Length: 164
Image (cartoon, rainbow, N blue to C red; front, side, top):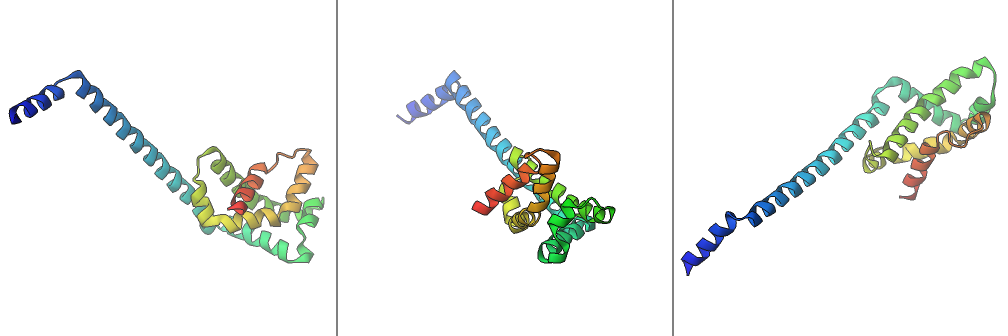
């Protein structure tokens, strides 16, 4: 009886069915490997991009400036946004630096380049606060350029993270 079992296993291993099953298993393992490699890559890329916010001085200064504008009534974001004076152009550029950074991050999250969970864990409050603090500036840019699509991805990400 033992010989029959071994013979059955031997016959099965030499059959077309075993080749098909082995091929299926190899394909499934490959799919899982690719999925997890892609997820890991997205996380690494997101972390690298998010690290810029704490290492690049222009972004650090821009984030601080944005916060100060929000907290200091004399440095109104709305005043900076609506001003046509050249003296306010430097402040406008400072706001645009941080907005462009978060615009790139939010677009990357939305299309799947960056991992949303990593962005949420590392910068959730800063993304939400930056959007809220610069809302008057964004509103003015949208009105000035006659497009509600300006910084829409940042608004989307801020709302998504705020809901979590």
